[in-house]
Length: 193
Ligand code: GRF
Image (cartoon, rainbow, N blue to C red; front, side, top):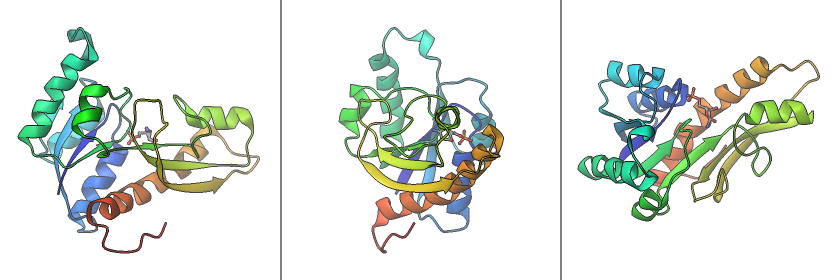
């Protein structure tokens, strides 16, 4: 099975997925990185891993449908089976949703439906909740609204900072995302969080 990762930033989740493939914990190939942020660190990571990259700047297109058609060409040329969003900071539009119905997933750093959208960790801190976590879900037209596939919680102490929460969340993400992808692609084993 062939995966495209979409990412806009650091790409630590991209790296975790690539590492899982190398360790043969994930039986798939990462055949494409799509990024909307020229200069993002995730692009350096893909180059190092020799993974082909399609980078675009949305401002060079008049509409979402235009750049998504461009993305679609790359997805088709690479015979992609699954789109994995990993810190991709744009809503997916109809062009991709229709072409890849049920085949686009996202990871979000909160227990959805709590704290959707930007800065989920900041939102959790602000709300002084005793638990937060991560969610992996199918992508629909909304912001972090699609059907939930898996969630994992962390307990917050009173001393927690943005950095300490982020560290815990990312460690969980790096473990859970490759496992869930493996499960979705192969559905061979009972899935345990
Ligand atoms: C992750 O925390 C993910 O949940 C969110 O964006 C962040 C991406 O981090 N959607 P990275 O670029 O994979 O390090």
